Amino acid sequence: MQKDTNKSFNTQMLNLFKKANIHKDRVAIQSDENEFTYGYLIERSNAIASFLLGDQSDLNEERIGLLVRPDIHYVAALWGIWKSGAIAVPLSLSAKESELEHYISDSNIRLIISSDNCEEQKNIPDRAEINIQNIEGIKEAASMSMPTLSYDRQAMIIYTSGTTNKPKGVLTTHGNIEAQITALVEAWKWTKDDHIPLILPLHHIHGIINSLCCPLYVGAKVSMLGEFNVDNVCKEIAHSDCTVFTAVPTIYFSLIEKMKKTNEAKILNGFKKLRLMMSGSAALAPEIHKKWEALTGQKILERYGMTEVGMALSNKIDGERRPGSVGEPLPNVEIRLEDENGNDITEEGEIGQILLKGPQVFSGYQNLPEKTEEAFKDGWFLTGDVAVMEGGYYRLLGRDSIDIIKSGGYKISALEIEDVLLKNKNVKECAVLAKNDEKWGEIVVAAIIPKNKAISEEELQNWCSMYLSDYKIPRIIKLLDQLPKNSMGKVTKNELKNLFNNP
Image (cartoon, rainbow, N blue to C red; front, top):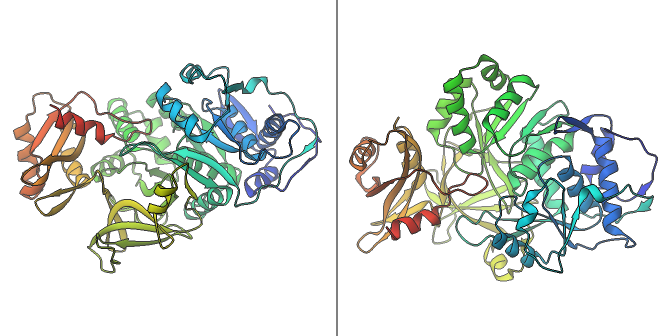
């Protein structure tokens, strides 16, 4: 698919692009049954950059939306936007018109790069000032100079999942992105011989950094499989030379169900031979860890990160992978815990909020200077996530605003209760949250997707009583057909709160 050219592009390149030059003849992307080399990716992204620049020498951090399906066009467009000196704003393919309206107006987007096969263009608000450019119409570049890209230049705006509030635009620099990538390349031992199937949405840090930029930084191969489909993933794993796999908990749920039904040796062997399997974006219940290891022999490596910082904590690749734990700080990440009075926690076993510092931490929230100021304390980023140190590893208890239930003077972790419920053979999925209560402040409630419709609230409460103290047992349990989730598979607990508050 590559066409060699001798065109000269004079620019001070970021390491991501310098390293691509080293691997020109290697396959970078496999998509739609075609393979594309790093050389092709360089050439095509240069063409896109030159198109965007026109007669300008630098787009000076103009915001450009990216609404492209997960294929070679996405990668070429992302690199082209960066090379032009613009800021990339990856847009969710699952976003509704009102959501896109928020992203577009908040980031002041005037141009959106899309593609012919992107039906989601229909959800772009009908505004005269928005120009939509299909990437197929961008022609080959002429020789030119492109802008110098220093590491303090803004590179990307990613919108948070919005599981606890309205999505905020997270601004990251090229330096932030490189720090996020290099920490993972070191910690997870990425090499050019790796091959990963990409099945995650590309408007989120897990897909963009972990699944795409890390392998491309080292000359590895990425198979872009599109939206998650359990059969497609199993086929890829069974018949390819994949070495790394990363997914969210809901994907592991689906894979476990699939393999229990089929029990195909090729699929099981494909997973068994991988050198590294990871889970993130939401907590993976220890019970799922156990089921996965029993099926494949693989111990899933769980890590912790968020849009504002990339990845921050990880279980060891060559050490203990403790179910329910998110491990130790990644390279160049500083971390501490702070109690609700703002005091440092120095002893194990004490619960506190995670504070982070390091070169990977974002530069601010788009159009929200007060929120940005509130998010930092003496140079430390206040994550809003609560954890406890146990045996040298951090264990995540959840978001302070949604997963920590304050009932009758107790602080209760929703994640702990969810793990107990998932041990019940009649529970497929669950979500535990708080309901406001006049007497107790908050009470524990749970939404359950049952495998057996005959199971009752009383039976589930009796089950919990075998593992949990009385004050942790859900007072109200609702049986549902499905849980509301965002595109990353995270349960949107605020929607569930409305269900419990308005029966």
